[in-house]
Amino acid sequence: MINADTLFDAYLDVNLLLAFVCGLWFVLARFLDIAGLSHAVTARLKMLRAVFLAVIVSPVFVALFALVSQAGYVASGPSVNLADFIVAQYLQGRIEMNPSALEEMLNLRSRFAEAMTSPAGQVVQWALAAGILTCLARLGWSILSLRRLIAESYVWRRFGRVELRVSDTASVPFSTRGIRSRIVVLPSAMLAREDDLRIALGHELQHLRQGDVEWEIVLGLIRPFLFWNPAFYVWKHQVEELRELSCDRQVLSRRGYDVAAYCDCLLRVCHDGLRPRRLLAVEAPVVALVRTENRVFGSRSAALLKRRMMSVIEGRAERHPRLVFALLAGPVLALTLTASVAIQKPGDWSQDRIMLSTIVNLERLAAVNGPVPSFGSPGY
Amino acid sequence: MSAKKKTKFLTEVELEFMSKLWDLGAATVRDVQDALAPARKLAYTSAATILRILEQKDFVTSTKQGKTFIYTATLSKDAYQSRSLKNLSEKLFDNAPATLVARLVDDDDLSQEALDEIRALIDKRLRDDKR
Image (cartoon, rainbow over all chains, first blue to last red; front, top):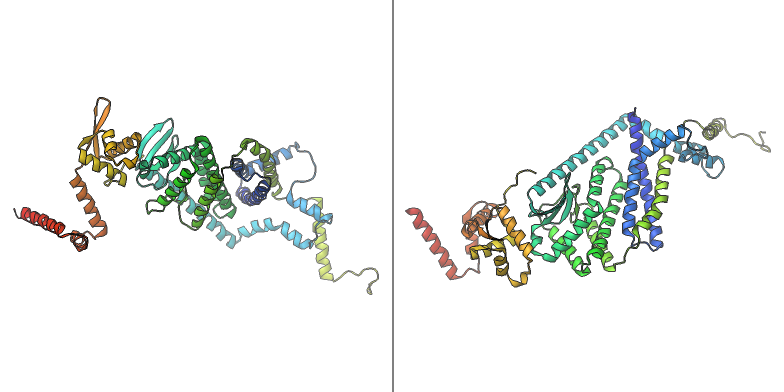
């Protein structure tokens, strides 16, 4: 039976792991830039998604790993636990630190769990629950608004499970999906601009092909639970940027649109999106041609548009994205899953932990009794 | 999906199409397309889509003749003008048509002929109301 403490621990682990992989991602991105793979946007996007998936399923992996370890299927060797590793390094003299401070640092997690049971901790828990509920309500509201917007739009064409719709209220083309059908909504004003219509449609269909809408829905559903974690927003921003860069590149290489016409179309749509029409909420599970919302990160949309244009103008072809992904994904995923096991609470007792505890106690005794005399000192 | 709320107003492109349809009376997609400015460069499929959406919005109706559809406006130009002005009066002139007319008459660009025309229209309306 899973109790509340285990769930809370798993929740904390996911948040910590996300922050860790976020840092790891920036190191890896820098490495890829140096290796001349700055244009490998599709491989990067796939890797970001694979690692995110690994973070989300990490509690299941940790539980399975614990089961397998208990059954004796894992060869006994050095512990993969981070706390155990730090203690071992300290005892071998590789870390210079006050033993009490080290023990305090290692017990940080237990102290945090204890603090959560205090009245202040209860307030934090209620605030967290309120935040999650607010985010869920906003998500529900944005889904309802989206449904209303789609209901008020007009069917243009249907092929297979894809439905093309024309809307008077949408200012920017976007794609989304229902339970069975996939929907592309285009602003009705765009019908009069043949070239823009073709480009926007090509772009949105590429999003559907890449499964971007499904990923946006997954991120939208997870967001309420990680709303307070800045790492999640950094991650989402990275995914959004790579998704658009990848989509632009794929559309241009597959369909051979003129780069200048493509950039013009992006600018025109962006301009249209600034008109005071009905805007879709940030939480809405849609993938738009351009983001025009002007909120806290308003300048971000403009910066992203600029980077997209620079990228398509540069027009470097991405070679073998699957191979690059396969080569990089293995080590990164292994590191992520190892980290998920490493950040777990250590076992209550181990030889090293007892040794550290003894050192701390001796330090405390020394502090109480005064300095211990040594050879040659006057008191000896 | 919930029942569609019928739109009462036309978008810019739709208004362009309706204007042509009001001039032509009944027309095919090709007729409307030909009547548009040559600089428009609108594809047949896009023109057909716009007319089909107008039909879904109940602004036009179509009848099939052989393989082609003939489109006819269900709403007269006068009726749409009234609807638009009423909306403008409600939204921008606090539901006071007099303010709207006052603004129009204050316009420096209005010629003497245009003012005479407006006066004649108002006189006619007043005479009609007395009957």
